[in-house]
Image (cartoon, rainbow, N blue to C red; front, top):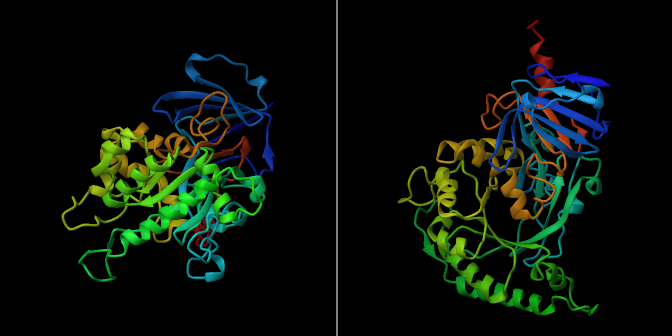
Length: 424
């Protein structure tokens, strides 16, 4: 039996590279276990066999023989979470925003439903390394640009290559719905988009033609149409990027007309104004970045912060995402967005759910991911303190499918290096 004990902020497992340290039977004991579904075990034990969770018990009420486990990890005083999920992110598709050659998320053309982000995912990204150590262990890597951007995929934040890192390939098509309003840079006045109806008709006509082609086995069917067949038959999601009430209402009308089975609103800044319709039609929302300013002069100053609470009160399913400026590197702030939502109405466990189980449910992977429950894959994040606070989020354990992943990155290594420069 190997016994590995974690002391405060120090991980005593030596792991070099990805997937180098794996044990068949692992027991994590003593931590506060946040299940992800709203429940919490103050002193819990989690057993893992061959990458699958096989035991979740209260440590104080469970008797076990440590010799039955290859590895025993003691996390007394620490917190254990399901790995956090970053929806709608260009992480893995971009490295340096200012360098065009390192941005691989925007293709030419307006209608690109056949573009697949999965095969462009860069597992060697230094940015992913810094995000992973804040608990983000799964990424919905997502293309951008055009009216239909392409297909996203669920990827692990530690892997050898894109094949090895794929959790769910091509989970859905992303559509950038035209805006009903326009505003020039630096102009505080919002104006009506006079071409909105024309842009909307063009997009709807394209989707109707694609639906008519769904299931068509004719080899001459253009790939741009056949690529959306699985979205219409319910095997994949349609992600509609929209923030305005007009946009959301028009999308909800289209959902009924085309009988779209799994639609998702991405952004949803004004979704609280149509929450009743969203609830009735069972349409979830991936809420845009909470750390933002209000968009309209008459908005409450804290509207972006309390939007999760408003949707939760209305019974609308939601999760958090981080689209915006420098979004790849800022994905590390995902747990802190949940912390902000907690400060503005959500309970701690509801906030944790918004970046774990809720995200997995919306993207269709909750059967195997999103909570710490028996039968699910062991994607776990251990932190010395609450992971929702910047000061206390300090990685002490990273497991992806039962494989140990380093809890340090090149930034923490540089910190240690220069900390000793003057004998400190």
